[in-house]
Image (tube, rainbow, N blue to C red; front, side, top):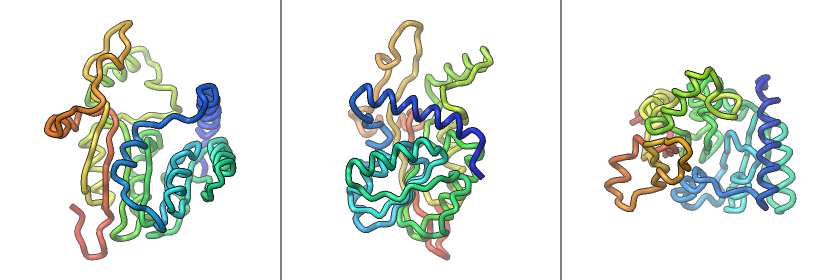
Length: 247
């Protein structure tokens, strides 16, 4: 069943597409950069992108030689994705569906990718279990999602005090790194590696937040030390083979 919230997501995607058109095209999102850095060769792999939005990353994956199934709960987003794929001459199978119950076949994908979707669904635990279900044993899953063990805690606190929504998205779940990691492990995944970007520890009135942040530390040791405090997280996961216990 497609959620009643999807009308709100349709409107949100239309708004985002209009912004992209005004700026001359879709931006290169930080979370997609993080995924690309560790993808490796995906030629001939069967890949599912869950929460594909307006399709730009699914198109990139197809251009890299993957057979791509891209799923989203917003019809508007999928129509935009199909149009962009046609314009670029790329073959992507776009499917309407929920991240918590995709309807895709079990153990069907070598690689499952989901960027900035887990925090916006009604049941993140169900979504994590669903991603595990559609991934092949021995297959890989890469997920990005925010963690709020940083200055964004202040934004959440202000929103609660004012009884307002934290962001312009129809739904946001409050995540901390360790909670998400446990959730993914309980779903059956082994956590191979993690990564994070965008470190921001202070918000001040009338000060551009980007002036008070570090995108990435030059020192790999500092990056690892501060990893739990990054805003945007990446989890590089594996679905264990039958008989192999998750880590």
